[in-house]
Image (cartoon, rainbow, N blue to C red; front, side, top):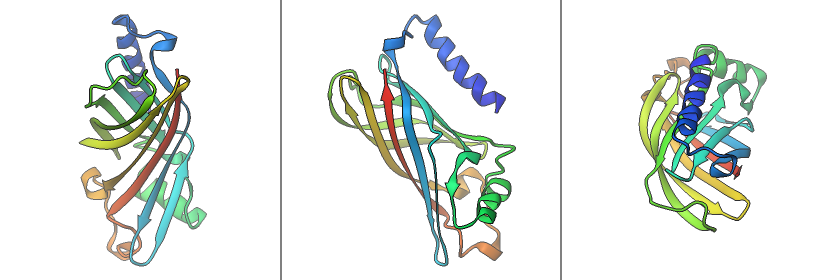
Length: 184
């Protein structure tokens, strides 16, 4: 957990040292949610979190997002949530999932409009980083940004194993959906 905070602090500090960080120069998540769905043959598991945090620097199109793994609510039972945090995500050891990098397209997010962009960066889940390109829809207005995205996370790529006894109850591919409002 300290490493993630240090990473975010380092990201912000480097922007300050470059002289590019002013209150009006970046977008910060005001309201955000992340949902996931595991649609396995014997069970559908869904959970969500409204604790999504993040920043976008429109000057260089860099971004950093994070969510605490133990903030997810929903599930089919309290026991299922406990197993998610203790057995699969090991939330005490890997408390956050993060995604940071740059927007590939040369787009001016400060200019009102609707944009389809690709975010390229490191997606870190369960302590394992994977280089990913994730497609997003961004609506820019005078007051801020609306960002939405849907993508798939493969458990094997993040060293999350499924015991044979519950193999038919947990999907190997998890569908993730993000919605966020970012303000200047």
